[in-house]
Image 1 (cartoon, rainbow, N blue to C red):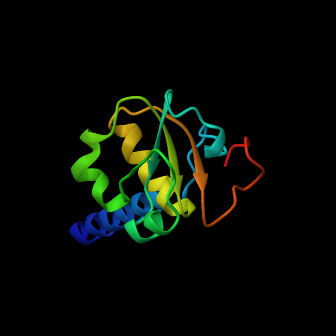
Image 2: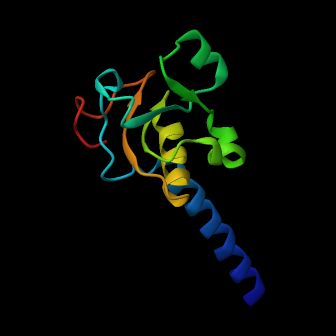
Amino acid sequence: MLITAIIGLAILALIVQWLYVRYVPIKGIPCLDFHKEDSMENVLLDIRDYQQASNDKIHDAVVMPVPYLHRYYQEIPRRSLHIIASDHLEKNVAIRFLKNKGFHIKGYSLTNGKCKDKFGKLA
């Protein structure tokens, strides 16, 4: 009986952690217009999938879809990052991963959606 309860709590904890990483917004990272960002100071990191990134190219952006971050994050220049994502789920997963690896995230932009408020507000 005790083992069943422990296993149930462990499964519940894993589900809560999975939901948190994907759906809870990151505080303190503003939604900014990437067209106004200085590419010498910041790295534009396009985390959309390759098809979206090739159809809607962003000049001077490093293209690295979310599934490739774990394997190739060392290739990202160690400057402030501006994340370009297609939706909030991609943005949340990528920002949490990159912050855990020591990157400074200056802001993000969404291409297929809007920020909760206008540019410059926290989302």
